[in-house]
Every structure is written in C-alpha cells, then in structure tokens.
Length: 336
Image (cartoon, rainbow, N blue to C red; front, side, top):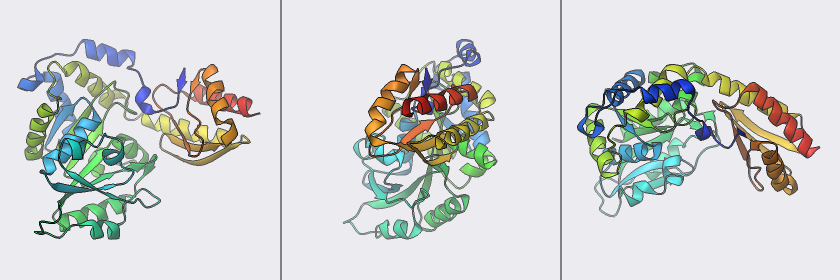
C-alpha cells in the first residue's frame, strides 16, 4: 500500500528495528535507562537547550510542557487551528486546568500580534484567568511560519512577561526546508516539543526540551499523566536512530511532495491549492470524491478525497519517487 494519509503511518526500518532490539536498558522512572538518557541529552544539545525529557507521544509532551509553564486558572494564547487547542482532546483545560485563549490565524498561519495583545488579560484583576504563555507552531499546513514573525511574537511575549512554547511536531522538516540548524529554530522558545513519530519515522516518541528547572517540573507532570515508562529505551532507541539517520533525508520527502503536486496539476478535475515541505493540499470534483477514494484504495493507494474541503496528501519515509509516479497515474486514470 501507498499511504498518503499522514507521515505518522511510517513503519520502523530494518536498521531502526535492530537498534531497538539491541538497546541497553534500565528503569527510566528511576532515571537509569542509558538509551533514554542518551536520547534526552542528544536532543537537548541539538536544540540548544539545557535538558530534555522523553515522552511516549507529542500530545503528552505538549501537555506536560503547558503544565510546567502554567498553574490552575492560568491561560495560554494559542491558534484556533493549533494542535494543542483543537486536536489534543482539550487536555490543557481538562487535565491541566489551563484555559486556552484561541486566536484566529492569519493566512500564513501566524497569530497577528495585535490580536495577541488584545487577548492578554489585565494583571491582578480576579475576574480573569492569568495570561501566562504563548504557544506557537512553526509549520502550518506544511508551510514554514516566517522566522521574522516567530522572533517578533516571542519578543513580544517576553515583553509581556509570558513564557513561550513551541509545538515542534515537524520542527525537523522546518529545519531542513529552511536550511537552518535545529537550535536556531528552538532558540526563541522556553520549551519545545520535538516529535519523532512523523517524518523521522519512529513508531512513537517525542522529547520536550527546555531549562533544567522547567524539565524537572515536566517530569513530575509526566509521571502523573501516565508517561513514566520503565524500559522505555526500547522506544528511545528508535528515536535515536531517526535522529542519526533520518533527518537529512526529509529533503527527499519535500521533493516527492513537489513532484506529486506537479503531477496532480496536470490532471483535469484536480486543483492543487498548495505544496510546502512534505504536504500537498488539493481539491477534487465533489461528486467524484467517494469514488476516487474507493478506486485508489483498490489500486493500493490510501488517501481520503474530501468533499467540502481540501484533501491533504503527505509524503514520508515509506513513499518513494516511484510511488509518487504511481499515484499520479492512478488519479489520472480514475478521473479520466
């Protein structure tokens, strides 16, 4: 099967599986799993931060990060379409007692500074939640959020006395696409959640990085949230392998997405809306969406042609240039 639904569907490579089965192990709750410790140190160093903490998922990493910044009754500023607000089960509010203040995105995915400023609550007024944190992403629908905006927004946040958190689900894609070191992208933020189970191809795993003090607070929250694993070096080994072998090759995914977009543009009934990094957004003739989805599945291609909205097609470790060619041919045949 060629699976274009997401870059979360990748499967461990043979080299990654070998690394997992041969990893030295300990008890991570006791702090003595050597593979976990090695991963945490390696990611923190590459991100330019003092410390790191391994999590089984990006959702838990983000949540522990928010809880390390905020107390009950505090508020964080976040985009209406941001993952921590819209797609992580309301965890900040339900489990962290942190009120999200959603902000409408600009077209490029940024949160306009004037809207952020208007959302900050008056200090010391008991009517309001206490605004404590700005949470951003650095890719939006595959697009890189402009670096100048990131700097301006984080500088503004610090001027307001706010902490800053980056949901860096695809921060390595951003680093490769911008040709900047990971540390440059992480530098404006107090904490960053870095995911390994998307384009980097690990089966699970994220690392939260930040100051030693913030990571110490996050460790307590991780335990409370059920993320205190034991011989989790089995999983950390996959992330280490991805860190050492799968970062530079993200450029291949970006090129394959470019090829996919170019091929789809030549097909009647397809409107390519955008292509950035490893994501293509396209629209198909509404009346043919269901038949196209079913027909492509019969051809061994998984995607979901959406009626009433853009369809996202995502390239990743398990999608080759030949696979892209097959997809373009199959779409042309099904819509012909």
